Length: 489
Image (cartoon, rainbow, N blue to C red; front, top):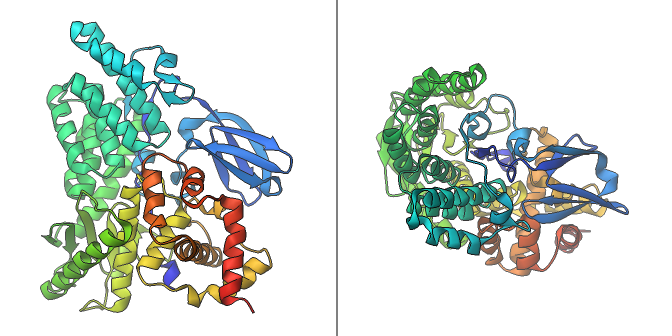
């Protein structure tokens, strides 16, 4: 079924800083279905549980909650990694990079949950009066960048990291932090520029070498990434961190064994890799032309143009399963690279075109929303833009909503990858229905506006409130009414 054909694995890096502002306590909500929600704070109000996530409040019924655990670590949270299957190449989980900054008066930099920009401007104005003043200004901007990164407001985090570099272009910690944020935002060219300078400053830094491996993995491929990771591993005294690098190296080497002999072609927006014995030059050119046309369509539909080229890899069915190790119902994957099996095809069919566009939407949405888009919106947009129609699942979904057997949208923010096939089917169907309802009742222009708000740092609840003047609870009710009007009996 087409709604099962893909799930996005976001390449999210966690910025690890030993600072009070970053290591703030967190609470964990354990739902009755086993899902864990890590939040900055959790409160109970009557029959509701309210938690703060990424700067906004989310309300869920207490009847869904098994228990609440207080006082965990916010840095242990990963919005998608905790729900992924074992074996994924997950840069956020495996990145053993730490940036240690001198102790500072954090309260002067972050006040009432926000960066004090005036204070940073004051420090910046004094940066030229002495080396100590310059370093204090740089470190303060890095604290601001790390705070925004922890909140997953990566545009703002990048701004403060770049400001730190304007104050001191060769500050090693600033170069590493800016590069980490660039990788999160999938701006690999910028990350490499920062890291090559960092490597010149400290040639034997395992942190710089590790990050270079990540940047090259997504921009050029596994062979170059593996070389940098091996250099970093040789310099890692910590056995646990070295083991994480070994896992990355092994994964990269497995991929290189398959992809090392692949042919490749580049266009303005894509890097296409394929096995020449399985895919003809004519077929590859047709795929590249299809991708370029779809890119132009998505530029218009989503009002956005990604800066970095998108890597697309074509596999045989066996190669795809060996490399991705995904559940059997997944027929394409986007983990920062679009991976598609094309066994038995010699031209672009309608099905293949739909798969390619579905996965390309994920790349657009991830970059546009800076990794902050909930999965229901990701998958709903991917299905709608690739041609799926609600008429196929609408009647059954209307019945499910009328009987209150649906999954609330607030529970569909995380990955669908570990859902069984029936549960995944419902999640995808609801996602498409929600996006179709927003398009039909609020206007198609609100969809890219939601992504823009997310990219600027809004939580999904705040973005929904700003763009649609509603909330999750009312959206669920409105979606039920929408489905009943269109497909109810």
